[in-house]
Image (cartoon, rainbow, N blue to C red; front, top):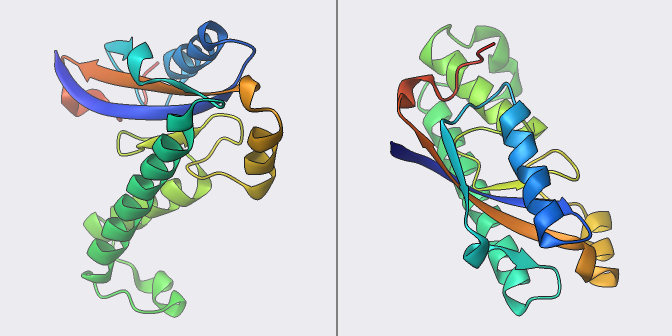
Length: 160
């Protein structure tokens, strides 16, 4: 078994147990990524009232931002400069890079997602949810998952 990804997932739940179940169910039912084994690392999970919550949230979102910026920099190497260039993006590697970038922006979970907001179904956090966390911290959880696969090449393939 090979560690493929670690994800920090934001959920809204009355308890850590229910939050863990939400995160687990999401990954078990996702068609976007399939892992052979998912370990929930409760020692790395944080409730909204924990002092580590804000730090972990900020850090994991920063990792997502960095990943997105790295994809954009890689995409720029294909010759893309302006929105007008979209009609000329080559099929293959350049179009796949653009595809990954749009997935990051529109919220589809992937193996590169360090943080995933299950409440809003995206890689970021809105001002509204941030405000709600401040007002009701006891109903929010960051669930840490380590995800493994015996066949890493099939993790991102939609399977039925």
